[in-house]
Length: 118
Image (cartoon, rainbow, N blue to C red; front, side, top):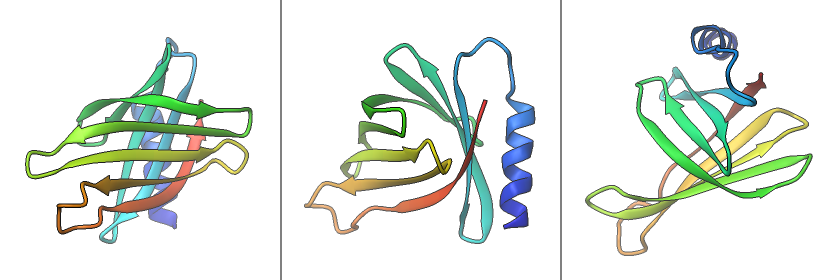
């Protein structure tokens, strides 16, 4: 948990700029390693930037004062899949997952983590 909080704080400091209206910085543990990403609101969607500098756009599927649900269709070459992310604005926790094409042998991945909102 300590690694997770340190990573979350570090990512927030590294990518903090004053020009964006809403930024959500999240972290999680994957294979015993702290990982993170940033979501930045951009009109009707969010820009998703990973710690490995990969950038994607996630569509806002549903939003209230309590929750934010994002999603996007991806073509991974060997399969197609739908990625979704559910962010609880009150607890600042998220859960995300990938639903793979049923023809693909893997069920997809999911993870949970904690976020900071700037």
